[in-house]
Amino acid sequence: MPPNTESVQVDAVQDVTEQFQKKLNLRELAHKGRYLVYPETKYPELVAFEHTDPGHKGDPEKKSLFGAATRVIESTPHIGTEIHGVQLHQLTEQQKNDLALLVAERGVVFFRKQEIDVYQGRELGKHFGPLHIHQNFGHPEGLPEVHVIHFDEDSDQTHFKYFSHQDGWHNDVPYELNPAGLTFLKIDTLPSSGGDTMWSSGYAAYDKLTPAFQKFIEGLEAVHSGFEQANSAIRAGRTVRRTPIETVHPVVRTHPVTGWKALWVQPGFTRRIVGLSKRESDAILDFLFQHIAGGHDFQVRLKWEEDTVAVWDNRSTFHNAIFDYLDVGLRHGWRITPQGEVPYFDPNSKSKAETSVRRHTKGPQGDSYNYLL
Image 1: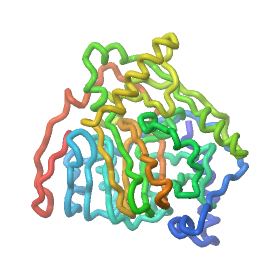
Image 2: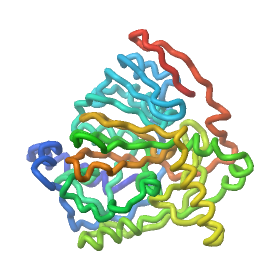
Image 3: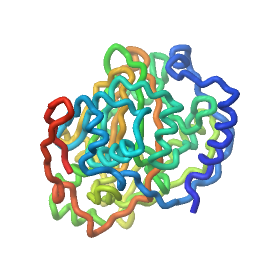
Image 4: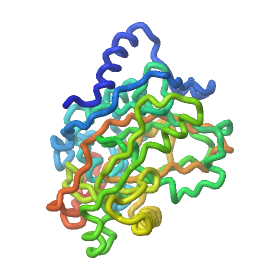
């Protein structure tokens, strides 16, 4: 079955269009005002496809990636690695594969002082899967695969006035048949303070549950809904370009590269557990949502610098953007979202805690760093 067919069709049109069109500088546009377009184009429905993750080709030692770095820092024991001295738009094929494996293991990897532009980011993203095109959001002219972050003092703050960030944890587009896999976000403009992002490890969230509770939730399935996003677009008078859907995915999923179990429900889009009464489902989901939000020992918080890129795995992490800056200044960036496999649970898979071994390694400049395999 073909992958994201609409993305292939759009690529062909863009290849021709961009020969006659000046490339956009999104940072410059953001400082001039709102620049997104909201076309009335209708997209064909997405179909499930088989995904082969490039992380399978990654070197367990990540020699091509770590060997090119000037420094590698483990952000926390459970999640997050920061790599210095590597430019993402210059990665070799093997470095891309090593990155896919590293992100699968560590959840999120940070790169600072990145020169990559949105067009190079789009090409890089294609290595990791078909690029998702959102059915509701606006996008830069000619770049439908690009999701833009653009908030400042002029943004509508109604939603955030009493919003609790405990409810902000989510994965990207989990309601799709093939939800997001590896994801890239570059922030190029920041307010004077605020605008951090947090990630939480789905591996460690699973491992922190008792064996009895792990056994109970394994094999359960939950409904993830795209209706709220669609209804928001409708209220704003914008076109919903595909039919909104709800999709059933496992509560605990197995990562195709690591083979580790990860908790995979979150308050952003998970609505109910299949086969349970509403009271039962609400009670279980409320516990799991609080478990994720309160898991400070398996979270990492990034204080962005301009031109930082975060690369994370939507299959094994949750993330939460902190909207504490809306009366301070502009925060702007762009995201590329390759799709991964249809989520599944393998009852023979193991948890990260059951399989991980800590290795101590010397980096190219003599820096010591640890990483988990």
